[in-house]
Length: 115
Image (cartoon, rainbow, N blue to C red; front, side, top):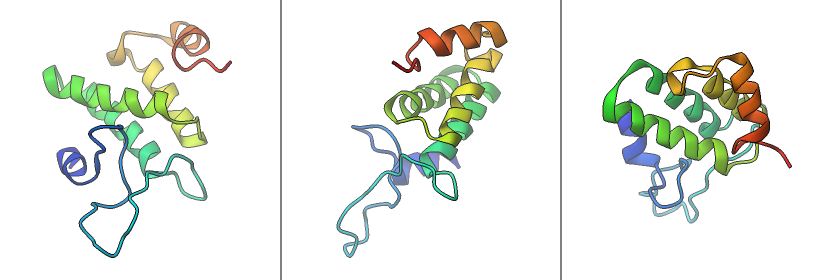
């Protein structure tokens, strides 16, 4: 399913996922949700899914999923569900071997640090 999502919705130049395929002529603007409302945004859910997929497979597929997830995590303001994705990312051993302490240090000093 992830390959289909990439084929239909991935923004290959700017990263993230659009809300539509861009094939409908009546839709004038392709947007990418970057905030959570009553429901998590598609990009927040995608980040969690990509992190999970990266931890389940190996090789180039894992790197592809990880790279797409990382782009979602650092390019967007941290909404609640996206913050959950960041925590899952830094605390999942398959994503760099970080445990709880290392993950907390990474969150406060790495690319996710809040100024």
